[in-house]
Image (cartoon, rainbow, N blue to C red; front, top):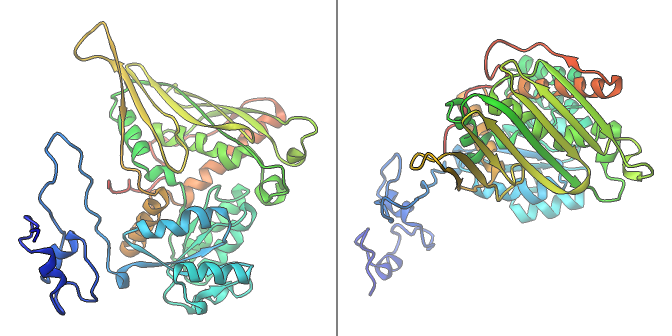
Length: 423
Protein backbone atom coordinates (compact mmCIF):
# COMPACT_ATOMS: atom_id res chain seq x y z
CA UNK A 1 0.00 0.00 0.00
CA UNK A 2 1.52 3.33 -1.09
CA UNK A 3 1.57 6.13 1.45
CA UNK A 4 1.56 9.82 0.53
CA UNK A 5 4.32 11.10 2.81
CA UNK A 6 2.99 14.64 2.75
CA UNK A 7 -0.50 13.96 4.03
CA UNK A 8 0.05 10.77 6.01
CA UNK A 9 -3.01 9.22 4.34
CA UNK A 10 -3.00 6.11 2.20
CA UNK A 11 -4.61 6.46 -1.21
CA UNK A 12 -6.65 3.27 -0.73
CA UNK A 13 -7.82 4.49 2.64
CA UNK A 14 -8.95 7.78 1.22
CA UNK A 15 -10.81 6.13 -1.62
CA UNK A 16 -12.57 3.88 0.83
CA UNK A 17 -13.71 6.63 3.15
CA UNK A 18 -17.49 6.85 3.06
CA UNK A 19 -18.83 10.41 3.10
CA UNK A 20 -15.36 11.76 3.90
CA UNK A 21 -13.23 14.20 1.99
CA UNK A 22 -14.11 12.61 -1.35
CA UNK A 23 -17.76 13.59 -1.02
CA UNK A 24 -19.15 12.60 -4.42
CA UNK A 25 -16.61 9.85 -4.89
CA UNK A 26 -14.19 11.94 -6.97
CA UNK A 27 -10.44 11.98 -6.41
CA UNK A 28 -9.54 15.44 -5.14
CA UNK A 29 -6.21 17.17 -5.78
CA UNK A 30 -3.82 17.45 -2.88
CA UNK A 31 -4.62 21.16 -2.47
CA UNK A 32 -8.26 20.30 -1.91
CA UNK A 33 -7.32 17.64 0.64
CA UNK A 34 -5.26 20.19 2.52
CA UNK A 35 -8.32 22.41 2.80
CA UNK A 36 -10.82 19.64 3.50
CA UNK A 37 -10.71 20.03 7.25
CA UNK A 38 -12.91 23.11 7.05
CA UNK A 39 -10.09 25.65 7.30
CA UNK A 40 -10.23 28.92 5.41
CA UNK A 41 -7.66 30.98 3.57
CA UNK A 42 -4.80 30.13 1.28
CA UNK A 43 -3.82 26.50 0.75
CA UNK A 44 -0.11 25.90 1.28
CA UNK A 45 1.98 22.87 0.40
CA UNK A 46 5.60 22.07 1.17
CA UNK A 47 7.96 22.58 -1.79
CA UNK A 48 8.34 19.66 -4.17
CA UNK A 49 11.54 20.91 -5.83
CA UNK A 50 14.86 22.24 -4.63
CA UNK A 51 15.32 25.99 -4.26
CA UNK A 52 17.35 25.99 -7.49
CA UNK A 53 14.22 25.03 -9.50
CA UNK A 54 11.12 26.94 -10.58
CA UNK A 55 7.80 26.04 -9.00
CA UNK A 56 4.53 27.53 -10.14
CA UNK A 57 2.11 28.99 -7.58
CA UNK A 58 -0.96 26.98 -6.68
CA UNK A 59 -4.22 28.16 -8.24
CA UNK A 60 -6.55 29.94 -5.85
CA UNK A 61 -9.99 29.48 -7.42
CA UNK A 62 -13.08 31.01 -5.89
CA UNK A 63 -16.07 28.81 -5.15
CA UNK A 64 -18.53 28.73 -8.07
CA UNK A 65 -21.12 30.85 -6.26
CA UNK A 66 -18.50 33.55 -5.58
CA UNK A 67 -17.36 33.88 -9.18
CA UNK A 68 -18.40 36.67 -11.53
CA UNK A 69 -20.87 35.56 -14.19
CA UNK A 70 -20.00 36.32 -17.83
CA UNK A 71 -22.05 36.43 -21.01
CA UNK A 72 -20.05 36.00 -24.22
CA UNK A 73 -21.50 38.17 -27.00
CA UNK A 74 -20.62 36.73 -30.40
CA UNK A 75 -19.61 33.15 -31.17
CA UNK A 76 -16.96 33.62 -33.82
CA UNK A 77 -13.49 32.12 -34.03
CA UNK A 78 -11.97 34.02 -31.10
CA UNK A 79 -14.78 33.02 -28.76
CA UNK A 80 -14.79 29.38 -29.81
CA UNK A 81 -11.03 28.85 -29.99
CA UNK A 82 -9.82 30.98 -27.09
CA UNK A 83 -12.38 32.59 -24.79
CA UNK A 84 -14.69 29.71 -23.98
CA UNK A 85 -11.86 27.22 -23.29
CA UNK A 86 -10.15 29.89 -21.15
CA UNK A 87 -12.91 29.73 -18.54
CA UNK A 88 -11.41 26.40 -17.42
CA UNK A 89 -8.27 28.32 -16.39
CA UNK A 90 -9.97 31.26 -14.70
CA UNK A 91 -10.11 31.51 -10.92
CA UNK A 92 -12.79 34.20 -10.54
CA UNK A 93 -15.09 33.82 -13.56
CA UNK A 94 -17.84 31.50 -14.71
CA UNK A 95 -19.55 31.24 -18.07
CA UNK A 96 -23.27 31.93 -17.60
CA UNK A 97 -24.76 33.05 -20.92
CA UNK A 98 -24.22 33.20 -24.67
CA UNK A 99 -25.42 35.76 -27.22
CA UNK A 100 -25.51 34.77 -30.91
CA UNK A 101 -27.56 35.38 -34.00
CA UNK A 102 -27.30 31.66 -34.88
CA UNK A 103 -29.62 29.65 -32.62
CA UNK A 104 -28.31 26.25 -33.69
CA UNK A 105 -24.72 27.26 -33.05
CA UNK A 106 -25.66 28.75 -29.68
CA UNK A 107 -27.41 25.54 -28.60
CA UNK A 108 -24.46 23.41 -29.69
CA UNK A 109 -21.96 25.56 -27.82
CA UNK A 110 -24.24 25.72 -24.79
CA UNK A 111 -24.30 21.92 -24.60
CA UNK A 112 -20.50 21.81 -24.88
CA UNK A 113 -20.00 24.23 -22.00
CA UNK A 114 -22.99 23.51 -19.79
CA UNK A 115 -24.84 26.79 -20.39
CA UNK A 116 -28.55 26.55 -19.66
CA UNK A 117 -30.86 27.13 -22.62
CA UNK A 118 -32.69 29.85 -20.69
CA UNK A 119 -29.43 31.80 -20.77
CA UNK A 120 -29.18 31.87 -24.57
CA UNK A 121 -29.88 35.21 -26.22
CA UNK A 122 -29.93 36.65 -29.72
CA UNK A 123 -29.32 40.26 -30.67
CA UNK A 124 -33.01 41.17 -30.41
CA UNK A 125 -33.38 39.74 -26.91
CA UNK A 126 -29.96 41.09 -25.81
CA UNK A 127 -31.50 43.87 -23.71
CA UNK A 128 -33.34 41.31 -21.56
CA UNK A 129 -29.98 40.45 -20.00
CA UNK A 130 -31.11 43.15 -17.58
CA UNK A 131 -33.45 40.55 -16.09
CA UNK A 132 -30.73 37.96 -15.50
CA UNK A 133 -28.89 38.57 -12.20
CA UNK A 134 -26.48 35.70 -12.93
CA UNK A 135 -24.83 37.83 -15.63
CA UNK A 136 -22.64 40.57 -14.21
CA UNK A 137 -20.28 41.07 -17.17
CA UNK A 138 -20.81 40.99 -20.91
CA UNK A 139 -17.71 40.30 -23.02
CA UNK A 140 -18.27 41.82 -26.46
CA UNK A 141 -16.59 39.86 -29.27
CA UNK A 142 -18.32 41.37 -32.30
CA UNK A 143 -17.13 43.20 -35.44
CA UNK A 144 -15.57 46.53 -34.48
CA UNK A 145 -18.46 48.63 -35.77
CA UNK A 146 -20.83 46.92 -33.29
CA UNK A 147 -18.77 47.53 -30.14
CA UNK A 148 -20.27 50.92 -29.32
CA UNK A 149 -23.91 49.88 -29.74
CA UNK A 150 -23.62 46.72 -27.68
CA UNK A 151 -21.58 48.41 -24.96
CA UNK A 152 -24.19 51.14 -24.58
CA UNK A 153 -27.00 48.57 -24.49
CA UNK A 154 -25.14 46.48 -21.92
CA UNK A 155 -24.60 49.51 -19.70
CA UNK A 156 -28.29 50.38 -19.90
CA UNK A 157 -29.04 46.76 -18.93
CA UNK A 158 -26.94 47.27 -15.80
CA UNK A 159 -23.97 45.12 -16.84
CA UNK A 160 -20.24 45.71 -16.68
CA UNK A 161 -18.50 45.52 -20.08
CA UNK A 162 -15.30 43.85 -21.28
CA UNK A 163 -14.83 44.79 -24.94
CA UNK A 164 -12.43 43.37 -27.51
CA UNK A 165 -9.88 45.62 -29.21
CA UNK A 166 -9.90 47.87 -31.10
CA UNK A 167 -12.37 49.54 -28.78
CA UNK A 168 -14.43 50.99 -31.66
CA UNK A 169 -14.17 52.49 -35.14
CA UNK A 170 -13.76 56.11 -34.04
CA UNK A 171 -12.85 58.38 -31.17
CA UNK A 172 -16.48 59.50 -31.01
CA UNK A 173 -17.71 55.93 -30.55
CA UNK A 174 -15.12 55.27 -27.83
CA UNK A 175 -16.27 58.35 -25.94
CA UNK A 176 -19.90 57.24 -26.29
CA UNK A 177 -19.01 53.90 -24.69
CA UNK A 178 -17.16 55.56 -21.81
CA UNK A 179 -20.00 57.98 -21.16
CA UNK A 180 -22.65 55.23 -21.18
CA UNK A 181 -20.79 53.07 -18.66
CA UNK A 182 -20.00 56.05 -16.47
CA UNK A 183 -23.66 57.12 -16.45
CA UNK A 184 -24.70 53.57 -15.51
CA UNK A 185 -21.93 53.37 -12.87
CA UNK A 186 -20.56 50.24 -14.52
CA UNK A 187 -16.98 49.23 -15.25
CA UNK A 188 -15.63 49.29 -18.81
CA UNK A 189 -12.44 47.47 -19.76
CA UNK A 190 -10.79 46.97 -23.14
CA UNK A 191 -9.40 43.46 -23.70
CA UNK A 192 -5.71 44.27 -24.13
CA UNK A 193 -4.68 40.74 -23.18
CA UNK A 194 -0.93 41.35 -23.45
CA UNK A 195 -0.94 44.00 -20.74
CA UNK A 196 -1.74 41.11 -18.35
CA UNK A 197 0.72 38.60 -19.84
CA UNK A 198 3.86 37.77 -17.73
CA UNK A 199 6.49 38.30 -20.46
CA UNK A 200 5.10 41.73 -21.30
CA UNK A 201 4.78 42.59 -17.60
CA UNK A 202 8.45 41.61 -17.15
CA UNK A 203 9.49 43.77 -20.12
CA UNK A 204 7.59 46.70 -18.62
CA UNK A 205 9.44 46.21 -15.34
CA UNK A 206 12.81 46.13 -17.11
CA UNK A 207 12.00 49.36 -18.95
CA UNK A 208 10.61 51.21 -15.94
CA UNK A 209 13.36 50.11 -13.54
CA UNK A 210 16.00 51.59 -15.89
CA UNK A 211 17.69 48.21 -16.27
CA UNK A 212 17.79 48.89 -20.01
CA UNK A 213 19.21 52.37 -19.44
CA UNK A 214 17.62 55.28 -21.27
CA UNK A 215 15.05 54.06 -23.79
CA UNK A 216 16.17 54.88 -27.33
CA UNK A 217 14.44 52.81 -30.00
CA UNK A 218 11.47 50.46 -30.26
CA UNK A 219 10.69 48.29 -33.25
CA UNK A 220 7.76 45.95 -33.77
CA UNK A 221 6.16 43.95 -36.58
CA UNK A 222 2.79 42.25 -36.41
CA UNK A 223 1.13 40.79 -39.47
CA UNK A 224 -0.49 37.77 -41.06
CA UNK A 225 -1.73 36.49 -44.41
CA UNK A 226 -5.51 36.87 -44.61
CA UNK A 227 -7.74 34.25 -46.20
CA UNK A 228 -9.14 35.24 -49.63
CA UNK A 229 -12.77 35.44 -48.57
CA UNK A 230 -15.34 38.12 -47.79
CA UNK A 231 -14.72 38.18 -44.03
CA UNK A 232 -15.89 41.20 -42.08
CA UNK A 233 -12.29 42.39 -41.50
CA UNK A 234 -12.13 43.28 -45.20
CA UNK A 235 -15.20 45.55 -44.97
CA UNK A 236 -14.37 49.09 -43.91
CA UNK A 237 -17.83 49.74 -42.50
CA UNK A 238 -17.45 46.79 -40.12
CA UNK A 239 -13.73 46.87 -39.36
CA UNK A 240 -12.98 50.60 -39.54
CA UNK A 241 -9.73 49.87 -41.36
CA UNK A 242 -7.40 47.05 -42.28
CA UNK A 243 -4.21 45.79 -40.70
CA UNK A 244 -3.60 48.91 -38.57
CA UNK A 245 -6.57 48.74 -36.16
CA UNK A 246 -6.68 44.94 -36.14
CA UNK A 247 -3.10 43.73 -35.63
CA UNK A 248 -1.04 46.91 -35.90
CA UNK A 249 -2.68 48.15 -32.72
CA UNK A 250 -0.56 45.63 -30.78
CA UNK A 251 2.63 47.39 -31.91
CA UNK A 252 1.18 50.79 -31.12
CA UNK A 253 -0.08 49.71 -27.73
CA UNK A 254 3.20 47.99 -26.79
CA UNK A 255 5.26 51.12 -27.55
CA UNK A 256 2.95 53.04 -25.21
CA UNK A 257 2.77 50.62 -22.29
CA UNK A 258 6.41 49.56 -22.31
CA UNK A 259 7.58 53.16 -22.09
CA UNK A 260 4.56 54.52 -20.23
CA UNK A 261 4.73 57.57 -22.49
CA UNK A 262 2.36 58.98 -25.11
CA UNK A 263 3.57 60.09 -28.56
CA UNK A 264 3.88 63.78 -29.42
CA UNK A 265 4.22 63.17 -33.17
CA UNK A 266 3.15 60.34 -35.45
CA UNK A 267 3.62 59.60 -39.14
CA UNK A 268 2.32 56.77 -41.26
CA UNK A 269 2.07 55.38 -44.77
CA UNK A 270 0.04 52.56 -46.26
CA UNK A 271 0.07 50.39 -49.36
CA UNK A 272 -2.04 47.60 -50.81
CA UNK A 273 -1.15 45.19 -53.61
CA UNK A 274 -2.99 46.33 -56.76
CA UNK A 275 -5.72 43.95 -57.86
CA UNK A 276 -5.90 42.01 -54.57
CA UNK A 277 -9.64 41.69 -53.90
CA UNK A 278 -9.06 41.48 -50.15
CA UNK A 279 -7.93 45.07 -50.04
CA UNK A 280 -10.52 46.93 -52.08
CA UNK A 281 -11.81 48.69 -48.96
CA UNK A 282 -9.07 48.38 -46.32
CA UNK A 283 -5.29 48.70 -46.34
CA UNK A 284 -2.97 45.72 -46.64
CA UNK A 285 0.20 47.23 -45.15
CA UNK A 286 0.79 50.12 -42.78
CA UNK A 287 4.15 51.49 -41.61
CA UNK A 288 4.28 54.06 -38.82
CA UNK A 289 6.65 56.03 -36.60
CA UNK A 290 5.93 57.39 -33.13
CA UNK A 291 8.04 60.06 -31.38
CA UNK A 292 7.84 60.28 -27.58
CA UNK A 293 8.71 63.16 -25.21
CA UNK A 294 11.81 61.42 -23.81
CA UNK A 295 13.31 61.04 -27.29
CA UNK A 296 12.26 57.41 -27.71
CA UNK A 297 11.33 56.59 -31.32
CA UNK A 298 9.14 53.65 -32.30
CA UNK A 299 9.18 52.18 -35.81
CA UNK A 300 6.40 49.67 -36.52
CA UNK A 301 4.98 47.66 -39.42
CA UNK A 302 1.80 45.70 -39.84
CA UNK A 303 0.30 43.79 -42.73
CA UNK A 304 -2.46 41.51 -43.94
CA UNK A 305 -0.65 39.83 -46.84
CA UNK A 306 2.55 38.27 -45.47
CA UNK A 307 3.51 35.22 -43.47
CA UNK A 308 2.98 35.49 -39.71
CA UNK A 309 5.52 37.76 -38.03
CA UNK A 310 4.94 38.91 -34.46
CA UNK A 311 7.97 40.43 -32.77
CA UNK A 312 9.17 43.46 -30.83
CA UNK A 313 12.43 44.86 -29.50
CA UNK A 314 12.95 47.69 -27.01
CA UNK A 315 16.50 49.11 -27.13
CA UNK A 316 18.05 51.07 -24.31
CA UNK A 317 21.44 52.65 -23.77
CA UNK A 318 22.59 49.71 -21.63
CA UNK A 319 20.58 46.69 -22.80
CA UNK A 320 17.79 45.51 -25.05
CA UNK A 321 14.84 43.20 -24.52
CA UNK A 322 12.92 41.45 -27.25
CA UNK A 323 10.00 39.07 -27.62
CA UNK A 324 9.63 36.78 -30.61
CA UNK A 325 6.89 35.81 -30.89
CA UNK A 326 5.54 38.79 -28.98
CA UNK A 327 1.85 39.06 -29.89
CA UNK A 328 0.72 35.43 -30.24
CA UNK A 329 -1.81 33.75 -27.96
CA UNK A 330 0.86 31.39 -26.61
CA UNK A 331 4.50 30.36 -26.97
CA UNK A 332 5.98 33.79 -26.20
CA UNK A 333 9.78 33.95 -25.86
CA UNK A 334 11.75 36.74 -24.24
CA UNK A 335 15.47 37.59 -24.50
CA UNK A 336 17.59 40.15 -22.69
CA UNK A 337 21.01 41.28 -23.93
CA UNK A 338 23.47 43.36 -21.89
CA UNK A 339 27.13 43.59 -20.88
CA UNK A 340 28.28 40.55 -18.98
CA UNK A 341 28.72 41.20 -15.24
CA UNK A 342 31.43 38.52 -15.21
CA UNK A 343 33.50 39.49 -18.25
CA UNK A 344 33.69 43.12 -19.38
CA UNK A 345 34.72 41.95 -22.86
CA UNK A 346 31.50 39.96 -23.37
CA UNK A 347 27.80 40.51 -23.86
CA UNK A 348 25.29 38.15 -22.28
CA UNK A 349 22.04 37.29 -24.07
CA UNK A 350 19.69 35.29 -21.88
CA UNK A 351 16.23 33.88 -22.44
CA UNK A 352 13.54 34.15 -19.80
CA UNK A 353 10.68 31.65 -19.64
CA UNK A 354 7.53 32.58 -17.73
CA UNK A 355 4.17 30.82 -17.10
CA UNK A 356 2.04 30.41 -20.23
CA UNK A 357 -1.46 30.39 -18.73
CA UNK A 358 -4.21 31.56 -21.09
CA UNK A 359 -3.88 35.30 -21.68
CA UNK A 360 -7.66 35.53 -21.88
CA UNK A 361 -8.09 33.82 -18.51
CA UNK A 362 -5.70 36.36 -16.99
CA UNK A 363 -7.53 39.38 -18.37
CA UNK A 364 -10.96 38.02 -17.43
CA UNK A 365 -9.81 37.28 -13.88
CA UNK A 366 -8.44 40.81 -13.60
CA UNK A 367 -11.76 42.28 -14.68
CA UNK A 368 -13.71 39.98 -12.35
CA UNK A 369 -11.55 41.20 -9.47
CA UNK A 370 -12.22 44.81 -10.46
CA UNK A 371 -15.97 44.17 -10.59
CA UNK A 372 -16.01 42.40 -7.21
CA UNK A 373 -13.93 45.09 -5.52
CA UNK A 374 -15.07 48.17 -7.45
CA UNK A 375 -11.60 48.92 -8.79
CA UNK A 376 -10.63 50.67 -12.02
CA UNK A 377 -9.30 48.13 -14.56
CA UNK A 378 -5.71 48.43 -15.75
CA UNK A 379 -7.00 48.95 -19.32
CA UNK A 380 -10.17 51.03 -18.96
CA UNK A 381 -12.06 52.68 -21.78
CA UNK A 382 -9.71 55.67 -21.69
CA UNK A 383 -6.85 53.39 -22.76
CA UNK A 384 -8.78 52.23 -25.81
CA UNK A 385 -9.79 55.80 -26.60
CA UNK A 386 -6.15 56.90 -26.63
CA UNK A 387 -5.18 54.18 -29.10
CA UNK A 388 -8.03 55.27 -31.35
CA UNK A 389 -6.88 58.92 -31.17
CA UNK A 390 -3.46 57.84 -32.41
CA UNK A 391 -4.88 55.54 -35.10
CA UNK A 392 -6.99 58.40 -36.48
CA UNK A 393 -3.89 60.61 -36.51
CA UNK A 394 -1.93 57.91 -38.36
CA UNK A 395 -4.63 57.63 -41.03
CA UNK A 396 -4.57 61.45 -41.41
CA UNK A 397 -0.80 61.32 -41.76
CA UNK A 398 -1.00 58.66 -44.45
CA UNK A 399 -3.69 60.59 -46.35
CA UNK A 400 -1.96 63.97 -46.08
CA UNK A 401 1.58 62.61 -46.29
CA UNK A 402 2.72 64.69 -43.37
CA UNK A 403 3.47 64.05 -39.67
CA UNK A 404 0.72 64.78 -37.16
CA UNK A 405 1.33 66.53 -33.84
CA UNK A 406 -0.34 65.23 -30.68
CA UNK A 407 -0.61 66.48 -27.13
CA UNK A 408 0.94 64.23 -24.50
CA UNK A 409 0.08 64.28 -20.78
CA UNK A 410 2.88 65.09 -18.38
CA UNK A 411 2.84 61.76 -16.54
CA UNK A 412 3.38 58.08 -17.25
CA UNK A 413 0.50 55.62 -17.71
CA UNK A 414 -1.91 58.52 -17.99
CA UNK A 415 -4.78 56.41 -19.34
CA UNK A 416 -4.27 53.19 -17.34
CA UNK A 417 -5.59 52.01 -14.02
CA UNK A 418 -3.58 50.25 -11.30
CA UNK A 419 -1.22 47.51 -12.47
CA UNK A 420 -2.64 43.97 -12.37
CA UNK A 421 -1.63 41.66 -9.55
CA UNK A 422 1.31 39.39 -10.37
CA UNK A 423 0.43 35.69 -10.72
